[in-house]
Image (cartoon, rainbow, N blue to C red; front, side, top):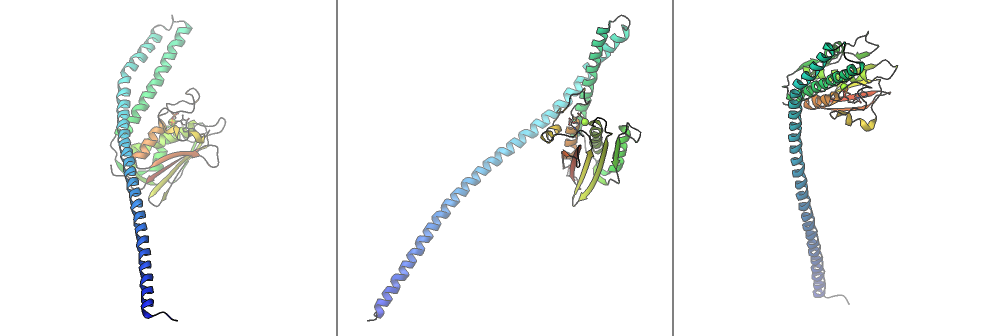
Length: 293
Ligand SMILES: Nc1ncnc2c1ncn2[C@@H]1O[C@H](COP(=O)(O)OP(=O)(O)O)[C@@H](O)[C@H]1O
Ligand SMILES: [Mg+2]
């Protein structure tokens, strides 16, 4: 016997009610999940905000301590010059006045003093140059890098005749930058490229530059002793040298100066192995447009 219309209606209503209850339960469950997810997100946002605050505080502290360091470098190096001149002047006077009476050992000791003061003098000059990099006002103009490299070679007395050292650069472009700082940058990089030469291998330094969209990519590459990859970052820190001054002269301030110049110009610099090696390639990337001062 078929169901009566009332039975059918009742059954349909019951089915509808069950479906509604199921939908309501599902909605309730989804709301709960959403609520939990929301609470989780809020927690995450809170945590992120805390991390951001910490980072901001640390960055501010870093800027402060960098400023302190620069101030210190300037004051210390400036005030160290006078006493150093006194030491050096009097030790030279001693040698001159007593050349006949001083025994060989005393003369040697005085020579040590003289060597020490020379080294200290170089350190002070480089420290002053380092602090000047961030203190000086930048005057961006169109600087022809080819001319910069050529003038650096002249300053460093690098020419075809200079102890076999060769600097190869061809048709380098004009770059909007501060001329003095660009000169200092290339002077330090080329000087290193020639200085850290391999024994019995005439140094060759190549400079190239190319534009990639809104970035200049500059490479200064040499065929010297190379920098082990584990030290590639460390060499940009002040006073970090991989060799003793008796082996290769220097103060360990050149690359920190380069880093500061490039970063002030809104770019970055890093060292990697030359290809093909051995040797070092310094890579520089700077935006075509300098950052606002
Ligand atoms: N072209 C290079 N080839 C090999 N080593 C290098 C080169 N340039 C820099 N270095 C290493 O990085 C150190 C730091 O360089 P820099 O700051 O210019 O100091 P400095 O030239 O006074 O030694 C150098 O002492 C040297 O160990
Ligand atoms: Mg150097």
